[in-house]
Amino acid sequence: MTGWRGADLTSRRADPPVPGSESYRGLAPVRLNGGSAHRGGYAPGPSLGGRRHRVRRVLHQLFGAGSPLRDLDWFLLAVVLALTAFGTLLVWAATATSGLTYHDPYLIRQGINIAIGLVLMAAVSLLDYRQLRLYAPIVLVLSCLGLLAVLSPLGRVVNGAKSWIDLPGGFQIEPSEYAKIAVIFVCAMILGELRPGQTRPGPRAIAKAVGLSLIPLVLVVAEPDLGVVILLLALVAGLVVLSGVRLRWIAALAVCAVGGIVAVAKLHLLKAYQVNRLTSFLHPSDDPRGTGYSAFQSKITIGSGGMTGQGLFHGQLVAGGFVPEQHTDFIFAVAGEEIGFVGEMVLIGLLALLLLRALHIAARADDQFGMLVAAGVAIWFGVQSFINIGMTIGIMPVTGLPLPFVSYGGSALFADMIAIGALHCVHRHRSVFGVR
Image (cartoon, rainbow, N blue to C red; front, side):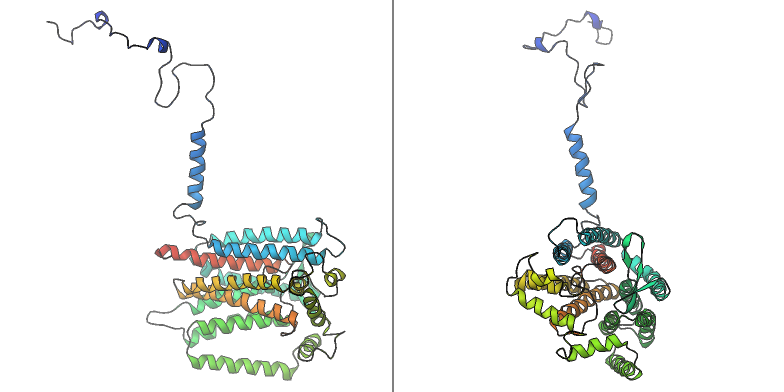
């Protein structure tokens, strides 16, 4: 008996063929990777499975666990996009006074502004939360340098205020818009740094926050830009109150604010046109063709729209250009005539959703710094929207503040988008602690 080790393998009898296997003889053996043992021939075709795998991998990187995009506040982003779309239509209607055209230069520039603003928002949204605190002093210094440049011969006077710097390509920049961001970041950085054992900021922190905020405030007063001054004062006061300081310090700040108003009135620090705007607000019927013209025409334009409006691009007063600056400061009057009371309520509803979302992010922030940043953005948009809408309907003086995300302009829209990016940054920080 011969063992299997010594057997002649060539002399072994072949196994009987499997029934039906004759048709498969001569074919190349199948490899595990799906290829063929034969060389040459046709090249392998595209693998749908490989493409799907790559697409899934990219989607997982964009929206998978730990991805910044997954942690964005998509509801907030949807509201912002709706407001910008709303504003683009209104700007188009306000500037297409000679007929509907797709080559409107204001429409094209507004589209460019929105694209740049979205890029800025995305860049700030992807920042690490701690970088907002680190960049706060840099933002303050840059904004102050911009305000100083405005006061130099580089600045240009528009409507009595030296607030703009001309850029190549017909663009302009308004540094006072970025002073709002600087004040929010600096106040949040100082008032949000609590020492061990502290539950509220002390008098030294309050003095430091107010003192640093006065630097851009004084520079804006020198322009002068009354609307931005009012907004900056509201930001500082609101952030100090929300930081949890004692009531006696709040009372002291209120006394200082009243004293400052009295000093401005007694020392005649306001320009003549600013005094005329305030007096025309208090007595609108005294000079309807002079200082009260803008507010007077705005109310007529809003009233002519009625409940549902005259239709987009069909407003007669808008087409006639009766309202000054109707594509910027008085964009709400355009909405009143062309889309009516119903359209204005939709616009106000979107702004309300924006404010509620910002307050929601502030309420769920992990620390005081994040709470103050989100609350500051909410104060900014709320006060500015109230002043803009109020001056178009005659309950606030004309100050030149645009309607956030709706009015035409690059600097204002860029600053608004950066603020939304800061809100996303605060919202994303909660994912570190696993809170939703």
